[in-house]
Image 1 (cartoon, helix red, strand yellow):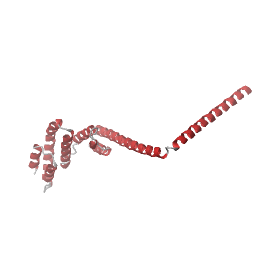
Image 2: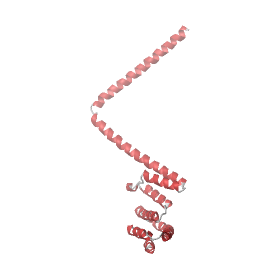
Image 3: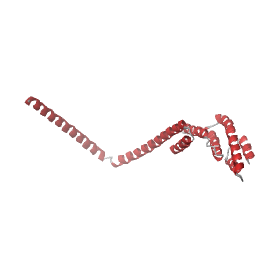
Image 4: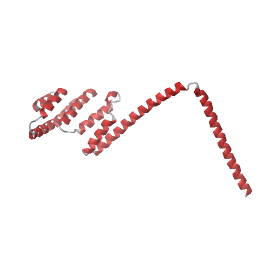
Length: 200
């Protein structure tokens, strides 16, 4: 079965059928042969993925993402976290999400990647992934806040179309009265200070 998988990858068949062949190739009757098969497939994927990445460099973002997803899933099946490949896929998705919103990487995906990078000893990559998660979270929070404020503003404008005029005059009257009281208080304080200095 591993030979069939090799052949499919060499013929650039990056689909679910090829992944099912890989899953079948990993099924073994004994542990020793399972380890050998897994190791051989891992080595094959590592060497072949470099060629594949060079070949897809000129392809569209959608095609690149499909191939990257296939490679990530293949590496996961053979027990390799392929963090570098996953990081490239996440960055590509994030870059292209400006024009294709469906590619947007959720902050939870960045956080999961950060944890896995940290656990594997890639602390600087984990830090950058956390920064990206924070940016995504802020973006999501700002969008939700903007939606909420628009909704509230619309509700308020409908509720107080006539009341707002009265409220404005009441508010400005209260504000003016507050200023007058403050000025009177300062005047009284100033007078009492001048009396104290005159009396001494």
